[in-house]
Image (cartoon, rainbow over all chains, first blue to last red):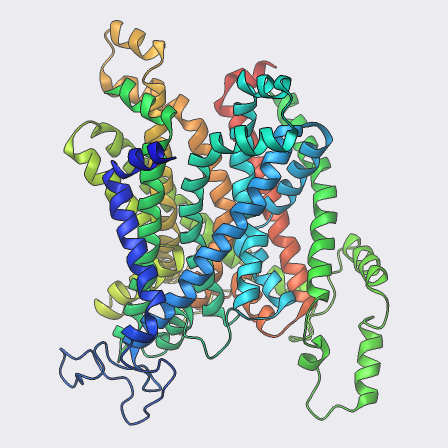
Length: 288
Length: 338
């Protein structure tokens, strides 16, 4: 495990991606300490203020205010909370569910594999955004339900990819060997197969965090995400859209928030894939 | 060739029936979990208890859920998707009116995305092993981190509000009308011989289509680049070099054809996803397509409409999968011989 960490950290992309992601995570965790204002506090005298460095800006509202006079910087900071909560919990949930099904399908094969694959087929016959919208209608809004919807939609991303990796691992000699020694199925799956697919799992997990941030933003843009009093980036975009001529800034800030977060997880995922996937490393070596 | 192609279409059609039944059941059950009463949305605020009961009975909501599902399925089999509780119109009519808008948008987005992606992928591959590789690689990662709806907003801010170059509301200038024939305004404006309307439609289409295309392009770039790298270790590339063929010819005639398979399957999967991506793009650009209609339906808890659109999305994805299979067949001679 430490060998894997060392190899990963030797890749500059992993370091850059991890720094960006950890930064957003830190902002999310320490939001109450960092935010200068209450993100829901309205100041109807100071609406649509520009950032402090522009004409008419107010130093107490660093990035300006929105149409209800709420501080944009504070909403950005608290928005990171919603985004990262969803990103971390939903990505882990989807990874857990998807890889559990993948391990079961790939290890046992046969009818179980067939059933799980058909379930994935059904899920894949839907654009993910549409499925999550339908789930949100059925489940109702709220942070817990957003996370649940993303897990229910995105487990297939893990299941498909991890299953084919499990099938490849099953062809190696040490799996039947472990069974011959008398290890139980559970032990072989958890001790032999799972470690072999972990690098892939970490890569997918990182990318899924970015996907979860985007899906949450889409749902909150439509008004079907977290509770109304939680500042989410998608809500900020939806609110600011009506004022883009007078106050483009209110639109740019949450857009940048989403972009930076997704960029961090994508760079991290790309770095992990490059540093932990031995086949890719060989392939790249063969070309150069 | 045609036998295999027919076989593929036949097999896909057979598989489509159980998938559609399962999907429709899933959608139906999920929507019955709804915490709010769907009737609340479709009745005036002064409705009496008796009105509610009549309505409930009319819509069949007083029956058990499995029975409701079977009834609904029976209606679908006859091509009847019910009546929208919000718009008070037939769901099939609403969808038929909106679908061409979305298809036109997605098709334009796909074309732009594929053009940008293929060009970018070839440039990335050509620059391999040099500084350009690092630059294009990081560049594609950055572009990849911007989803469709953020592109949509960026493009509006930059080219619509900022430079005022292109329109970004609706499908056509407000003072123009095009008589509907196919619903595809690019086609209808030409059929009607209105060249200025055609130009207006194209200008309105450009930004949203570009938003979709820009989200797709970096994915194509990266997959094409890595499959080209895979292809170049094959013996026939060395052989072609020994035969004295130019590098350009090797790339365009030999390598590209073989590297096209993974790219084609990526485009297939992404084309399905793009129908999800248009949702917000349509809302942002006020395009009256099925994405916009879906958002309206969802906001109004319009169950018949949500169910109908969900099925349409499912059918679209199944059709795309079939087309991808056929493209595979055309690209891969090995499959044809089997």
